[in-house]
Length: 419
Image (cartoon, rainbow, N blue to C red; front, side, top):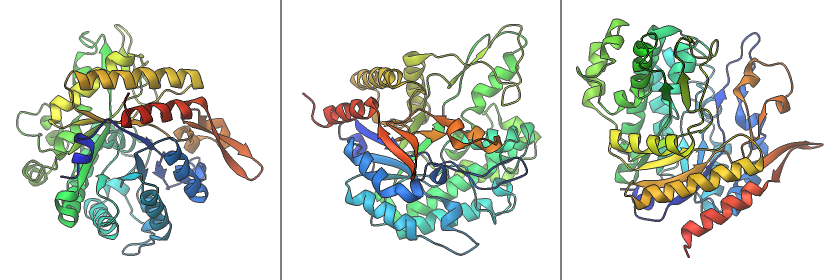
């Protein structure tokens, strides 16, 4: 199995380049292409050298589906060829995000299109065939439950479905495409393939047993795992959300197919942000959740971090990887979280938890998704998260190292060459 590189070696240190793509615009809504916003399309070579220079062994990096597949049956791999080739030349292992939200502009209905599952699998298999000699590690869908919430429950991104019916419909569609993607790649790469499933972690704490919150909190706690449960064949007659899926028209044949053809993770990726991953229910206070009326968050720090890693390892029976983490703040705050979270991973490994990788996200700053609904400059939406700061310069964005870059390099180097 290709996953042995992770499971039989030291703790692997990696980075990510933010690759959210929502290319569909609308009145009052700007398209989001993080590679364009961060000027990665132009600076890709230097960006890869930055990652190599701070000791990244692997890089979570996404293919822009909307660019490589500009029309049905048409492909343009020129830019992607150069990036992936250079990544491998630098000795960085690519972990390819195939779907980080956006679909091509020609796919009407996006994730709700009847042919979405077949189209996304076609794209994935085409990529796997093209890069079979260079890439073995794939994430079929990054954060599938965020896809469901943003596109299917909150009506925030295309196709703008809403409520429980939208969430049920998109959960099934995304799970179907996910399974087809993984099985198609497996046919191309065989046992060389490594599948890193990645989901956002959503924790719910506080007055979750209060009468006014109990039912909703229970639903949310199960829903956080829904797509991964569908993908791994866990949604059977005992699953607490099966009645919800059936109530909103789930196709029984599709439910059976999802159970009968599970796509299991070789590594289960956990995206955890201490300041955002835990939502707080308050007794006597009602928040609808989502964007219109968000619940407050609570920073549960290392406690939530360790609990989340254990939960995913136990639930899915696979080694776990920290696939995204950071805090948005000063360099000192970022270094403090880097130090404490890396130390916690080493402690968990010493206790026997199979944590195989640690990913700081992102390599350089990114732009908040609120840019899509804003009117101001991109700088107004910049999030100070990266090892390198993005600074507006006369010729475009400059990448300026922060103290976090050297701190990361030292920890990555120590993992490879322990004292």
